[in-house]
Amino acid sequence: MNDASDVGGRVEIEYCTQCRWLPRAAWLAQELLTTFEAELTELALKPGTGGVFVVRVDDEVVWDRREQGFPEPTAVKKLVRDRVAPGKSLGHSDR
Image 1: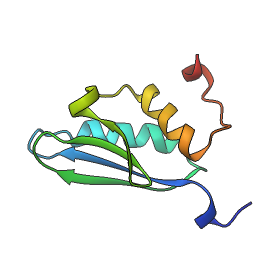
Image 2: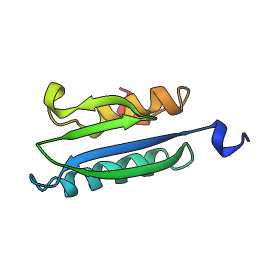
Image 3: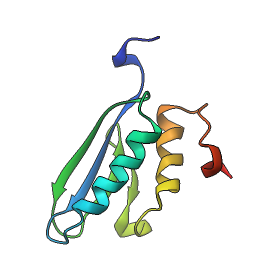
């Protein structure tokens, strides 16, 4: 196995506190941590304002609510997988 600094990635979910989107962000975080428990080195929830709901992998924006609406977990899982574990099967989510 590689050194932890060589594998996996850091996911950040920035959510709007004014809109009370913490439960949505926490639920998505739980879905990602369950799916990628061995591949992620960190998952952060970042409070924000102004209607923000953005998912980043290693500082790269992979989902922005302003452009794409709220994500389905399956869509975010595919985007995260493509960056941190390209060979990983997502089972029924890949269909």
